[in-house]
Length: 374
Image 1 (cartoon, one colour):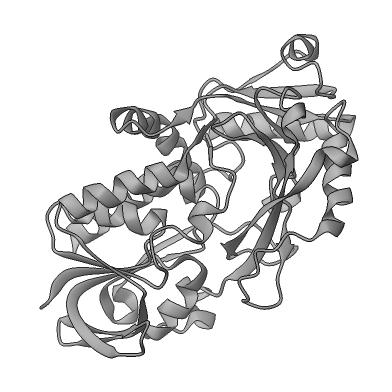
Image 2 (cartoon, rainbow, N blue to C red):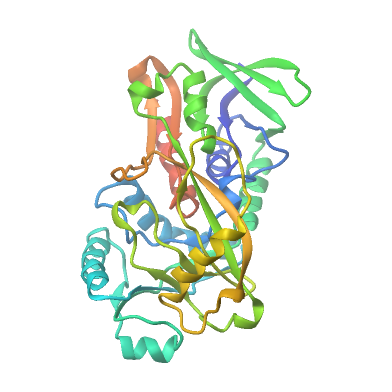
């Protein structure tokens, strides 16, 4: 046996798993890119969520609520730049107000602490440029420098003895007796194999493909993911005083997305995004078309006074691996050990999208618990 654990994917979840498991096991992390966190993990809003939106008893709700309590002490301990800026969720009409009431009940049933209704007149004192008829206040929502967080996890895993193989592509895994033989391809096309007792599929945008290459029928297992692209537009620096907190509209139905919201980065700059655009292909196209500017302006102007069309410029885009289909019902994270499919020691992490960044360390804890029981 070459390694006790092989982890496929060095996004934030793979890094968290490597950090945990490398404390007591030999670990190899495979990553097809030149470094860690170059896909979904670095192309998002960098928001620390609190667990408001997700259905009660879902993994997304439970892990996010727990993560919100645990992540701030971790960030402080390791000097990761972050701010507990707080978030307003705003209703711009009576229909949204009804949805906000439902959202508040859902948040409280999930165990979200400190969330509350916020008087509109008081909101106007705090955020004079925000238009709404009702609002919720989530003081424990924050922002984090995701790259710094990933760098900390990477360094801890390395200090624990984990090996990282960048520019190495996972080809397939085959169970032979009690071990997995894992075929790997280098960027130069060379192929070699390593053996391990456990395989952790943290491959993000390729998670269903990796599951298939491990011997899972992804259609039968309902593991097939969909690519959903989200674009961002930056608000010019001269308008960075438009808001001082995260501002979210009332979310879309079935949680396809949380709506085009106003976010703040660690430098105090403002962005709008993301939208949700389901893709028909798996092309990693991160372009931000100019024609989307009107859509983002109209979305932002619906709740932000003083926002003008020319304040916006294309920023970045990200792609989420969603189990949910376009117009389909909510789908939860999948964290599953595959003994029932004859693949003991294989753990698949499927559809890890938002709130995956917030929940990354808690997801890693779940994986560790599963491995400790095997």
